[in-house]
Length: 251
Image 1 (cartoon, rainbow, N blue to C red):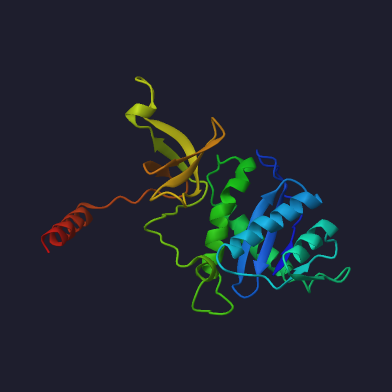
Image 2: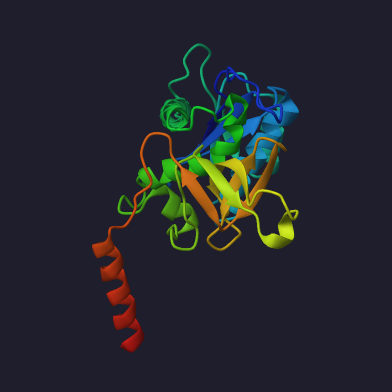
């Protein structure tokens, strides 16, 4: 494995995050990143623990870690306590740490994703988008040990889009508020933004509500993309789908 910390992100998130800690596993080619509040040793160790736990929870065990030359003693102690060896990059030469290349790949994917968000999506909400960015990036990367699998499938198994649908990050949405969730004369929907899949819920979406600065899960939302119109099935498409449903019901 290799890990590193890119430079500070230009905008501090609402939750106080200023940095991104990144880890890459060589065999699976899997890149995992988490937001961090500082470059303090304690925060770096916590970032390493969080990323490494994603691998160990899925049966992957590290043997040695390549680190930047400025690695803290607290981090190297944690690595040794987990029965791994570590190697430090040479001063002034970071090419031996292949996390540097992973940082470039992650930053490119991260920037392109942000460019697709709605113009009204808050700049300080970038850290909320990272869970889906981790998923989509690794779905696009091939595993080192089995190039027929994606890096995501190598670690987590196949991604089930039917169970956990995804949408464009930062898309403007309206969440339907059910009768028991709203007042008598209140609007029937809450405005927000889509920020990722609800991995522990069936066919739900994770949403960010700017008015309350809270996240919310829902399975009934309407998307309002700013760059294109929502596809609307034609009468012929609707008739075709109805015939398919009837055929399935009669068979």
